[in-house]
Length: 288
Figure (cartoon, rainbow, N blue to C red):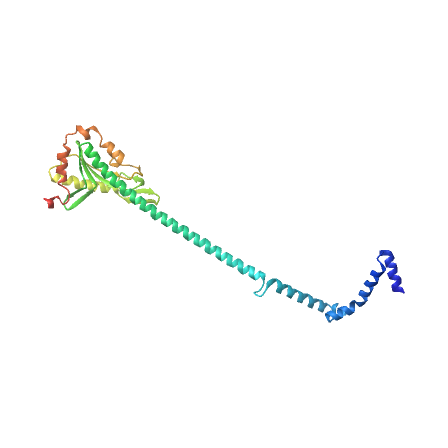
């Protein structure tokens, strides 16, 4: 009666239909039986902390197993995958750097080959211009000008004989910027490979000059004016620093040789004088 009165009172207050309230009451009464039947534990056992903790631990184990799998979990997998990705990225970067270095080496080799080809072409073109200039102006050119004296040979690219003088030409194929000197110290060149020494070109020219002058004096031609010049044949060369008077590019050399005294007003017969000087070349005696 008290229960019915309570349900009636609650029903009046909540306005829930009596049949629904009756079903709820029956479920509450049967709840201990249902818990025992389907879980194997009584309500009081479920209320113990140890059971609750065991249940939570079992649930956590199932969650870990579901989330992490057989190999130690997603976190381990993520760590392994991340390490593998980082290693692959490092290998990719290293391969890219190696490929870039290889391409740079190939470009450097190609550039050096092209530069060497250009230097040779400029040298051959300079020799051709000397021949053309001499022929056009009726001068005399000795190519090569390897004049021998006392067992030594002056390694001249050419000797050109004008109406005023004989000019021995020492050709150099350096490109870039040549830092000249007026003393006997080494010269330098600046190009794509940096700055490096290229020898004491001034002193070498003096040595060549002394050999030719000595051979001419020994042959009775000491009164013929003679000069030794350095010719830089590259079309990409710039002469800087303290440039001596006997250092020329192709343009400045032919400009100097175009003076009236060289082309027509001088006292020499270029053809006859040139033939005499050509007899001083290395190996001429053997050919006789």
